[in-house]
Image (cartoon, rainbow, N blue to C red; front, top):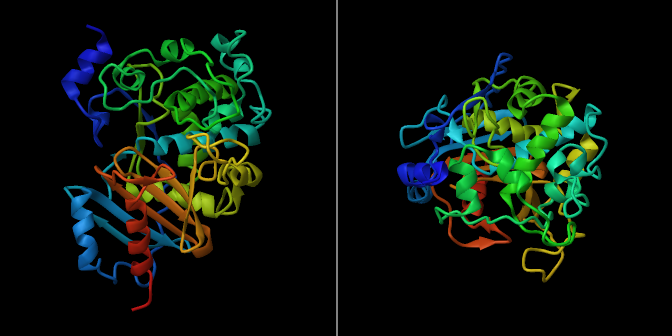
Length: 359
């Protein structure tokens, strides 16, 4: 029996605390900058109508930051301010930020650079047309199976297997890159190999130097690997606390700057957080108006919202017009979606809106 299948049958469905079953690389926090606390911190209780949704969706953390100050934080189901949680696919957005850092550092020329320059297995007739921007916009056309429920899918093989690099090298382009959006976790994993080759560092180390320490994270994060000394599971499996995840949202609101220092180029971030409308959507019926460079885009009360989202309802929401960041962590999300965005996102936005209104 293959290693991945044995592990999948042993551990079952992916969980928030799966760092306990995988090897991990540390993303050290040694430049702690606690959040400033707002005058009305936790003064507004969560309305009773929302407590039902918090319970129903198995919420573990809910955090609101406005104008750079912590307004609300609450924890459930045994979680606390120091508990780290799996990000699942929110990690994809972190990888996108790292690409922006690498471009700023001059390690990568631009998003138009060919993938094969950095990931040699793709220097083939089938894959040599693939560019970094195709990976970022989920328009690579690679031969990947994104099913989460099947123990035999490539996604399961990636999550529970022990050789991600060979699995990525085995893929090939089957649809024209840069034409149509198709959400594939392999795109992010390949980006991690691009980053590693370009920077000479694994992505946990690069994230530590370029994001986690400059952002003043207060807790060391973990990035799970496929085996001891192996590769980070870049498309998922970044574990951090709710208030440290909020720093990613604040960085977006700050146009890539933190304490006056540019971390991610503002031009890259502007492109990353607006829809890639030159692509067709997943159905091929209209321009893509809800996804950028590994970031989701929606609107709430006619205000744009930049969203990081994960499999179990892990969300970081940045609302520029309100200078607000909302973090919701948990184990469930709404089954119904609009433009691939679960409907419970709007519950958490409404709750944050109410918690920040004057008494």
